[in-house]
Length: 103
Image (cartoon, rainbow, N blue to C red; front, top):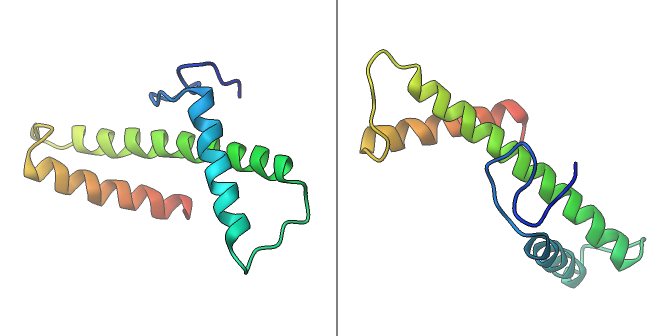
């Protein structure tokens, strides 16, 4: 997967490379502060792996979102986005997709 400055490929999520690096560094720094965590690799390797995991999570999130929206659109009647019914169905279908992936 190649990251450009504005968009993660194959998703609708826009995040700059710098912001993704900032997030990865923040996660790695937070892990370093935990007494239960001991790094056996250098901090840069940890940050790079954290970034890889974040990219993977963003890809999964995009897939989950698309699947939940598709389930709502497949209903017999049209359910307008932004309505309470749409929001309830979206949360339900989103959680169902998360469970399928085991996240």
